[in-house]
Amino acid sequence: MNNLKGKIALITGGNRGLGKATALALAAEGIDIVITGRNETKLQAAAQEIEKLGVAAHYVAFDIGNYEEVKKAVQTIKSKVKTIDILVNNAGIASFGSIMDMEVSEWERIIQTNLLGTYYMTKEVLPILLGNKEGDIFNVSSTAGLNGNATISAYSASKFGVIGFSESLMKEVRKENIRVCTLTPSTIASDMAKDLDLTDGNPDKVLQPEDFGQLIATILKLPRRAMLTAASLWSTNP
Image (cartoon, rainbow, N blue to C red; front, top):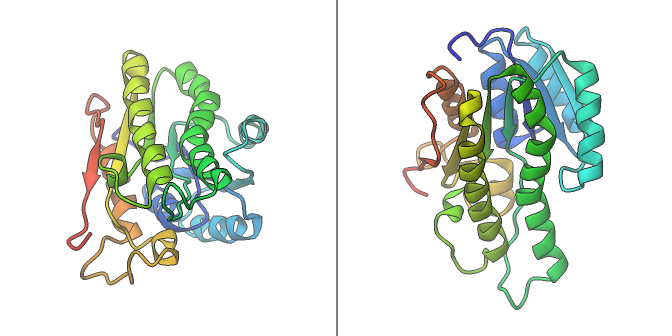
């Protein structure tokens, strides 16, 4: 997909952090944007910022961890845009806690959002890409999806799952001219990472959301035969 202008990208969790940075990076390439999230006020503000780059920007507020809401939201999106060319499954949540200390409901919430949310969105958007006979899907995992660690069992399990799901998906749809890329970044100065005190955001030591957005924009310019099953992005001080 060398000519990006006029394409349409759907980005989950697009009202802040990595999702918003990705939306801005793609908008700078002339791609129209649809962002999703749960906070309508923040989505509206982000859409207005994206529109300043001269592209169309739409937003829909819903919970990607709820399949019924996802199905309804995708129908709403289809009424707003003519098609979807790019899907970025970025939305995710995290929290710390040992296996014994974390509540079952919290463990399930992380899996529901990070893993099942990625599946739900893909299941509903994939028919559009298949109909177009081309497309790009980016699933955001993490280095925590490559190596587990103490106190992040739910997050790590969800991100391991995203990698396995993505590899299976890639093998199913590559013959349909649909590229599936799995991104496994280390610590990035996102809102979530700052909220969890994983980084102070020092740009001399840690990747910035803009770096992540530019990576996706760069991959989109490669021939679609360039498929990445796990592209890692490391901070200098992860």
